[in-house]
Structures are given as C-alpha cells and as structure tokens.
Image 1 (cartoon, rainbow, N blue to C red):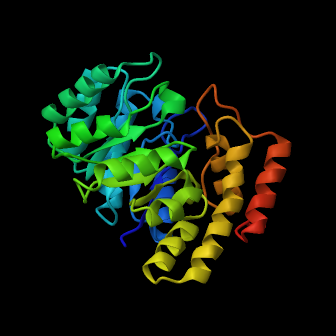
Image 2 (image 1 turned 60 degrees about the vertical axis):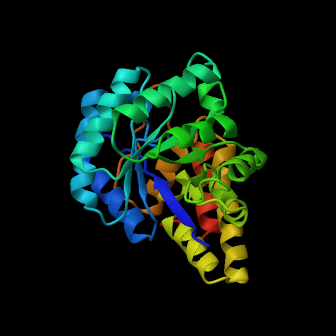
Image 3 (image 1 turned 30 degrees about the vertical axis):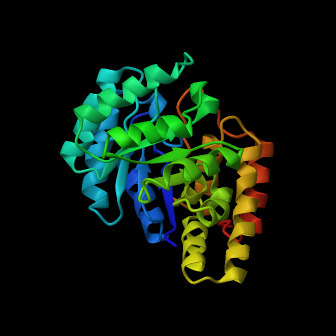
Length: 299
C-alpha cells in the first residue's frame, strides 16, 4: 500500500499583495519538516486565480530553488487561455518542477469533447508529468472517469488526477475505471478527511489544504497506514475530522487556513487577495477552538 499526503501550499503576500518570498520559504520549510510527501504550488489554496503571470513565474523560480528536490514539486499551471497554460507549463518544466497540475477553464460549462481537445493539445505540447484537476464545484462541469481514461490511453505524460468532490463515489469510479488498465495512475482526493477511504479503495492518498496547518497529522496518518497501525489510523482520522471543520464556515476557506497558520505560530501575514475577506472575530474564536482540540494552538 503506497499512500501519500501532498500539501497544496498557501501563497504568502505582503500588505501590498506582492509575494512575500521569505514567508513563502518558511511555509515550504514548515510543511516539508512536518513530513508531507510533496508540494503543490499555486493550487486553489494558493490563490493562483488572483496572481499575475509574472508573480506565478517568480514563485516557480523561488520554489524550485528553495525546495531543492527535498520533496516533489508540482505546479498549478491551469489558466483561462490554453496558450497561457502551455506557456506556464513549459516554464515550470524548464525551471525544474517535477510536474504540473492543471484545472480546465472555468466560467462556461464545457462539453466533454472540448475538454478532451484542451488536454490533448496541452499534453502534446509539453514534456512533463501532468495531473488533471477535477473540481466541478468551481469549474461548473465534471471530468468523468471515462474521459480521464481516454486521455491516459493517449498520453503517457498524464500520470494522475486530483478529484475534489464531496461524494467519494465519484473518486471510487475513477479508481475502478482507470486502475485496472493503468495501475500506476495516481488518484488523489481533494478533501483531507477522505484519506483513509481513498487509500483503502486503491487510490494514492490526498492533496489537501489542511496540512498547511497541521502537516504532522497528514504525515502521521501516512506512517500509520504503512505500519498497519489501526489505532493510530483511527486517531489521525479523528484529528483530521476536527481540522476539517475549517471547511464548514467562511467562504472560501483559504482565509481561515492562513489565520490558523498564524495562530499556530508560523511567521507570515494572513493577507488574502481581494475580494477574499479575512475571518471575522467569531470565526477566529472558532479557529482557535479547533486548533486547541488538536493541541496545536500557539498560546
């Protein structure tokens, strides 16, 4: 059983919404030292949607240099324009990233054939590992198991996916559809508390934002699975269930994660890009209670 917990890291900004390079270094070090199995740069939790192309390229260069292959680095390169996605994907590969994760264009709901052509064009144009990011709640349409299987059959560089759906039945169908033919295809859940269900069903684990706050919970859970330690598997499930309450208030949850990191004691500003809002006083009290329950609140 090969299980992984990968962190889609937040992006630290200063009060002028410029990249805070030193704070980003501290974030990357924090999750690596916490034992996570890889880093996603500029995923949804990383506010990729609010960054300029120049900021994205600057962050890629810094991440490749600072992370220095201590863990695999996968870069979110999905853009609204296909040409921009290809440009950023080639840039990430050239600078030394280990792969990319690509969310398809959002705003319009797209047909299956148009999405297939989109990923065909990108996979043909670049020479790097590609993970497909399925997030129907944000894109407005679903990437079906049958579509992903067809894409994998055509492109050896499409190596896995992140399935961010509440209903695990969708992820199970991905596993049942793709893995019998491509046993090395990596299928990750997008919600941290689905880790055990994913791995026990044959998936690869989770790419989950809560490990920005508590990487040791994710890495401890992975270790427990590798050691077949049922008591610890149950313990970490309960720990993550508590942390997952951060999903239940605040829209979206990124500002809550950043505030939780600050309350945990990570040296960074909890700046979020407009129009995201900082947590209210009531939200902060709820965040503190969650951190207190998992014993990671910095008093």
